[in-house]
Length: 134
Image (cartoon, rainbow, N blue to C red; front, side, top):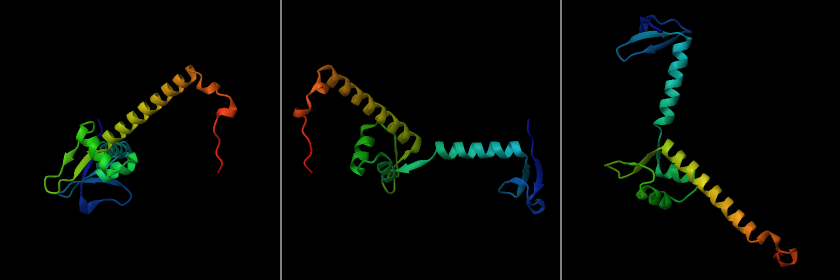
């Protein structure tokens, strides 16, 4: 178990890392504790990061109206501010939705490609393939 040494805020040594509480109590942290604090803060900030619908629209490259439809469908949970009516979503939920959507899109494209190959669409002679004039 790692323990921190208690000090008062007015007796801090420059160059050392401390955790300071609201009441002024300070705890000197060793390297392991600093690493743990950084990991916890990084994890908490990524897990709890909230996004507005506008941020979600930019990330997904869709219109705000489409974001509204996605949220109304219940696919992604959201919270609504009672004063403003603005909806916010957890970033992790949006990223999960984006990954799943991309996976479904890739799978559908592969299925279409396989079906086209199966019925011989790739065997079309060159003279039947339209070309661009511009």
